[in-house]
Every structure is written in C-alpha cells, then in structure tokens.
Length: 258
Ligand code: ADP
Ligand code: MG
Image: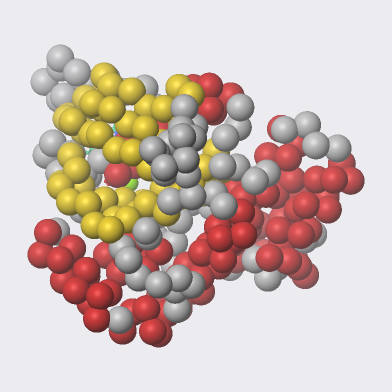
C-alpha cells in the first residue's frame, strides 16, 4: 500500500497448502498465491467448490498453517494478528452458542477483549439495533430464523471493531431475498466501521455486488486465475447496481472465466 505508507491489511506471498503432503491422498489445495489487500478494501473470493477458498481464508485467519509461503495481517504474522484479535469472523454456519442469549453471543468477543460488563452490553445492544434485531436481545438463537441468526453472527463479528472481517459464504444457506437484504446490511456496517473485508462466495453476482475487487480461483491445483477491479459507484443499490452495464459486463467476464 504505497499511497499511505501503512502496511497492507493482508499481504500473502508464495502461499501454498498441500493436505496430506507426501501421502498417496495428497491434495494441492493452493499453490503460488500472491495477494495484497489494502486497508478498507472489500475483496470477494470466488470459485467453484473445492478450489481452495476456505483454505485460503483459514490461512489468513491463522486457523490453518501454510505448507509454505507467508501471510501478514496489518504487517504482522497471522498468528500475532490472531492473538491481538485483529479479526472478526462469520461463516456459513452462524456459529452462535446455543446456550447463550442473542445479546450474550454478541458480547462474547468483547468479553474476550476484557471490556467491562456495562460497556459490552451497551455495545452489543447497539449492534443489535444496527442489524434490526433490537427486540430479540434476550431470545435464544434457536428462536430466530436462519437469516436472523446470520445477522447476529455478523453483529458479533463486527462488535469489537476488528480491522479485518473474514466471511466464508455467510449467506450460503439463505434464500435470495434474505440474502440481498443481508448484503446491504454488511455493506453499510462495513462502511461505518472502515473494516477491510475478505468475503468468500460461490455466487458470481454477490461477489461483484459487494466487492471493490473480485479474485477468481481455479481448481486442481487451487490458484488465482483472475482479478477484476470493480469500479461500480457506492453506495451500491440492488436495483441500479445490478442493471448497470458495467455490472453486466463484469458478470459476463467472470462467467466466461468460471
Ligand atoms: P472451497 O472452500 O473452495 O470449496 P476448500 O478450501 O474447502 O475449497 O478445499 C480445497 C481442497 O482441499 C479440496 O479438494 C478439499 O477436498 C481439500 N481439503 C480441504 N480441507 C482438507 C483437509 N482438512 N484434509 C484434506 N483435504 C482437504
Ligand atoms: Mg469453502
């Protein structure tokens, strides 16, 4: 990120992941991945099932060790960034704790950061308002629909103002209407928080609609195959953005690639 001199939000160099290396069932999940992401950038990762999207995200999150290569987050090794809780994460399964009420789920990362009780309750309630679930604070997760659970997961991921938000097909299990509503909620939350986002999806239009940049992966071995800069105006809008000729052109280009 030469323009400001600040470290890149994510700096991936020569990254490779082989599962079961040296065994007959070895899988080259990712090879030769180089990727720089600027602070505040929204990057969509797209590609067919099995091309290594989750593997890449998990190495950025320090949930998985690379076979070789390096991942820096905010200029630090991923392990350090994880210890310092630079991340918020939201995955396809909402990952809510069933025995905790909605508001106490959102408080969890704040508890881990050592926020006092009053401050974390206030912040959790504020996040619930932002995802339009103000009336559900004391509900248990199972009392909410799938879309509502996912909104709670997003609120939890962003509650502690993490500089980097990692999302792995967070809307994968939801119907199209719910999904579009959540796309807009994520965009407005991210805009308000200045977070950098890496968003994994297998939905081409979702990737373009959300992103400043779309990175397309190819399978066997998993690798970067295409990078598209998305110069669509913000704020994005479900009707006008999707009808923009540039949107249609980008969709065509990605479709041909995949
Ligand atoms: P995607 O998220 O794009 O669908 P993944 O990153 O989950 O793809 O997987 C990439 C490849 O690595 C796939 O071939 C998958 O089967 C393989 N893989 C993922 N995790 C493991 C694992 N823990 N052990 C062995 N192979 C794995
Ligand atoms: Mg995956």
